[in-house]
Image 1 (cartoon, rainbow, N blue to C red):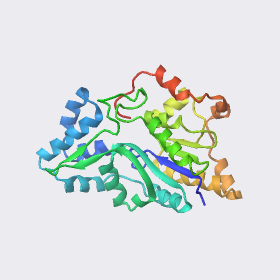
Image 2: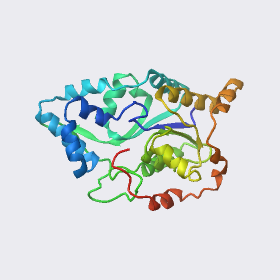
Image 3: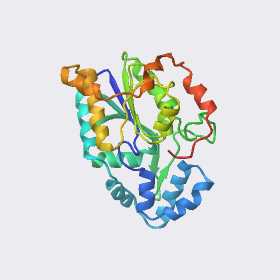
Image 4: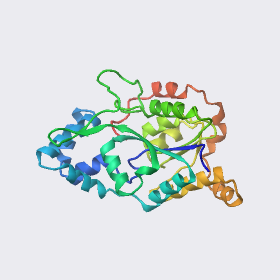
Length: 284
């Protein structure tokens, strides 16, 4: 039914209601070391360093997997993902977490098969049975040049490639869901007829509120994860079903006032905006 809709999710503080990196660091007892090293190195290599520290403390891959099974995820999110997949939406993840953490959590909740693609930092288990985490983008060799995003991943560039990869099958509409400054970067790649679902009172919301003309998509904000599940399904149903009840639900999702002016935004908004921003905090 929804063959023309692609839904791209951030993962941390969106699908799950926490940061998966922080969760593992806190739960497995290396928070003090993490806090000590955080000012000295980028987030992505720091997480690889934390995996080495866990291995040195005799924490196993199984220990990490069991820890990830306890990550909080609202049942409404699980239900909404399953329903959107059943509608025929193409669901994807775009995240600055890593594939081991994401796979473990999605598998535990029985929804990994709902997603056609997961774009995130790669990981592997080395010969010592130690989890290693690598950057999505090799920022040592070259910079992606975006000041909105961390050095290891520009979500705007990845989103642009996702859009190009699916366009060969015809016109697609997108829903993007996220909470951080890099999700705002991804949202700048949305077009008229797309939908941006930002988490209110998080960095993405602050950037949208401060720069309302830069995003072409309709904006439906959300606060908590149970609310996100409802808003996501209402957006999908109202867009594709078009029946009376769907329209009534859609009418209750009111975009922020400035959206009526967004059609005049230049296609180069991403480049113009990111060049004017200071470098953001290392993790959003």
